[in-house]
Amino acid sequence: MAWNRVGHDIMRAVTDPYALYCIALGHAHDAAQLRERTVDGRLTLVITTLAMVSASGLAGCGERCGRAHPADITPSLRELADADGAELRSLTPPQAAALGALYRTQTAAGYLGDTVLAACGAALVAHAENIPLLTTPRARYCYVTGRPASLATRIEIDSVPDAGDHP
Image (cartoon, rainbow, N blue to C red):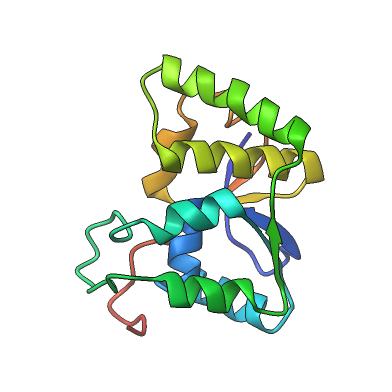
């Protein structure tokens, strides 16, 4: 489906690991707004446990932003997961089986790893709930085979802070 830009009309969305990383840190303008809206409950941010695990292992945003990144973002992830608008989600057994099949298509095309697995899981949840999937430009490789991409409308958030963004 289409790549869209983040808007204030989103009331509920799923996040992949790269978007989760950025949102947890309020890393750029879109991410900071999504974090604020999740904290105050204006946005229900569905976070899969796979996305949380994968995001906690990321060493940085994956972009050339020039910003220092904390060595451990787990406290920021826990704080976000405890917010009024956050909904931590484990996959159901049927979703887990579907994720395995979806991941197999990705690995057959040469795309593998925890971020790909977590992104596929987030796309499955977004599809099952008919809600958008928040992602970043860095995560595009997670969706290249088309199968995960066809599951949900992806909304790409800014992942590189502008000069005026707060640290």
